[in-house]
Image (cartoon, rainbow, N blue to C red; front, side, top):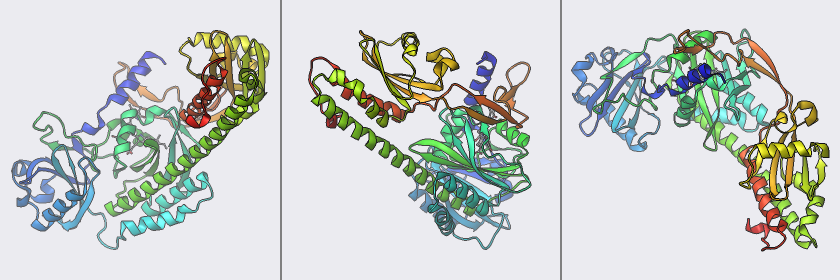
Length: 513
Ligand code: BLA
């Protein structure tokens, strides 16, 4: 990548989005210290809530501004939460000067109790978030497959929230992402199937969204409200990681404006400790979503996460089961062979079953054996040259997804692309190979991936791209990437084979591994 782009990307992912020192204007923040509820920080707009300007509140007790009942509910709510956990709804109450009811959410972080108060957009008729989430779960629970599930998820969230467009956005192995399901107003053009570069949602944002499950921007053209004072006693801005009202990155607000989006919400989908994706919602005009609806969306998001995680676990368990059965069979057959080393060539078909691949090859005593889709013997010198370039010698598995890496050209790879090479005897150049076919991919990017953002002339201010027009790219010469599960399967097979491959030495049982 060119150095200016790389610098811009680094700048993008180093913005400290949790230290924005401001909130969005649709609510108010009061941060207090226990045991006396001494007010340490407020948002600059607090006067419209309590009638007192920030200076008149700071260092005073919260008891002077909120009723005892409300403080009691806040105290009880903190009792349920762990420090650093997301805000919980404490109460719905009339507060101070405001004529309408307010939603009060509370969490504890960095030794302070953070109270976020949002005047409710609607006052009556709200259904319990748990009941709403239950209904939504019932409507997606019996989906036929993952595509159907994702589609129903998008539809249910749109029904709940009324956004113009709701998408299920899935991250790929390279942190780019794709819209895998969408429910939208019929006037909008579809984003289904579009791919977005990793830099659209930089690493620190992805890390934050693992901890903070739901984010709402009711009006993307808002003016941030500063927090007073902007630093704490240690001279640090407040950590707003879990604040529902956190003022978000200005680059992202520009991005939304460029997309024609005036309001948004996103919910994290987390599977196996990894940010699997987001449920992303857009609206063309500003839109408030009441905290009760957000609570239902959050619960539903937790269900979606758990369902996706359990599907992934089931898949991993099935792969592991197949691999284990192949290992057991292989161990038995090699143990019964008069020369296990020589018997391996006859077991390549079995090995192909254990690994997610299209073919296997074995280079042994200078001879090439293969099963399934594998290159011809004439490719062996270029395979070995690739392994030398990789600097083998540690005895570990070597892999690539890219045909040109080992074959020199697409033509020479003859429809194959991915290779995973397992050293059997480095001294004698003996290797076991697994091959994957090329997957020709027709990628539709939302805007050109070569200019994922714009940089000003000095190269120090970076902004989102202005055009999201679909940009086609045909990706050639790549297989599906080898993932951690593939490496685990192959490394365990390697252990079984390696022990029997040695001419002498102890034998291990597959069941020991
Ligand atoms: C955040 N970018 C985001 C978020 C989304 C996207 C969903 C999370 C916002 C939230 O949860 O509120 C991007 N939105 C998308 C994508 C789709 C969508 C891909 O609807 C697809 C349909 N963004 C840039 C560039 C930078 C950048 C160049 O384009 C960096 C210079 C930054 N994006 C950026 C930052 C955030 C972000 C910093 C975090 C915003 C925050 O939470 O403060």
